[in-house]
Amino acid sequence: MNDDSTGRLVRWLREWVAAVPPGTRLPSSRSLAAEHGVGPVTVQRATRALVDAGLVETRSGVGAFVRQRGTARPPDLEWQTGALGPRPPGPVALPAPLRPTATDVLALHSGYPTADLLPERLVHAALSRAARSASATRVADSAGLPELRAWFAGELAGGTPAGIAPPAARQVLVTPGSQSGLSGVFRALVGPGRPLLVESPTYWGALTAAVHVGVHVVPVPSGPDGPDPDAVDRAFAETGARAFYAQPSFANPTGTRWSAETGDAVLDVVRRRSGFLIEDDWAHDFGIDADPRPLAAQDDAGHVVYLRSLTKSVSPAIRVGAVIARGPAFERLLADHAAEAMYVSAVLQTAALDVVRQPAWTTHRRNLRRTLRDRRDLLLHSLSRHTPAALVDRTPVGGLHLWIRVPDGVAVDRLVRDCAADGVQIAAGDEWFPAEPTGSYVRASFAGPDPDRFDDAARVLQGAVDRQA
Image 1: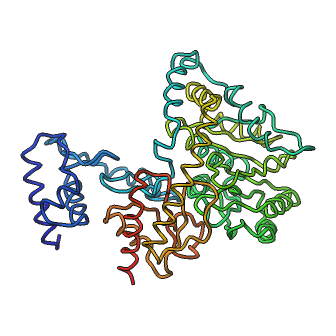
Image 2 (image 1 turned 180 degrees about the vertical axis):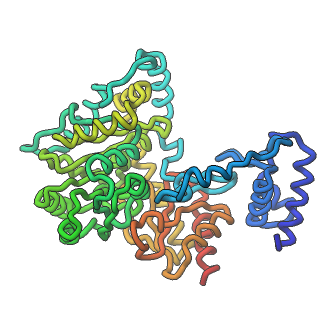
Image 3 (image 1 turned 45 degrees about the horizontal axis):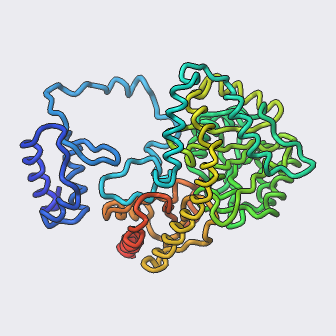
């Protein structure tokens, strides 16, 4: 450690840790910075040094605590290196949206809405009723509770135009969240070693699922109105792919909502190529200035495999999603699901159904739309006032995030680290690209905590950009 101030703070913290009992919470970053006359970066480095030394442990969202002292020799685990062999393909660290947040940090990196944007009262009541019901000791059907399957089918059927057969409950598979659904769809309908077309940029979770299944990802550029249908057609022809993963409504990370013309044209391409469109409607409940427009509602020939989840909009503790598919594709998905997960907890399914059947659910969604609009506009305003280096190509009409372009040449990883050191956590845009990034991007959520600190976040972002000028 070359920084004298960091070294002095580490020595002081070591003495402090030695004088207090295990389990004692460390003083906050702000109080340490004020007492010792140092900056937040110095405090973070000193705390990390104590963590690395085994003297302190961090607990996500709570703080840093003195560890239990022990004298046992650390176990020797080097034998696992030979037993495990080479590392399999895939990420070597948690993606940014899943990383824990340190105390006193403004979290703009998460993919989940903060608790005050969720129907907490409905969730608590629903879980209590479900725990007292027969579902607490019930083995659920592999495909899901019939009533919940019917609800998911009815939601999609509400947008089905005349002349198209609406989906039926028997075509719905309940999954433990959409991430599990993605893995199952890629495994059952694409297969290891086979090509899968994806938008670029696209959801990092889909890229992770594809890597772990062994699917070969083929990027298709996607702009403010969605992908070019001709580019999708060429990709199908050149690769022999039989599936295209996309987010036509409020894409993560860009917030893009495909135009109706783009959706119709892409669906025509998929039909002509006898392929599948894997439609991820993750933000169905997060429309702001527009409503979602599921392409699955326009297809009754089994070309569109549709995913929707309640995890983000109801509660992260209720991991319940659904896949809607027709024909033999559904049977393959059901067989894969039974082998992988067997079934989804009946308690969670019952609670999820309870929430979305309540009249207050409709009221909550209406209020949520207004709140998301206010927070989105507040973050946009903060960026325009304090961060001239940041550019949002198009205001998202739904979703939870802003996709922010910073000047070319900015090292995004360093930018993210510098922001975190100054108390603001954002996500590096590189994680959303299936190939080399086409620019320097970061993603910031307007659905996280502390919107009153958006101005501070914008200043921190500009300062981190300026340090690389």
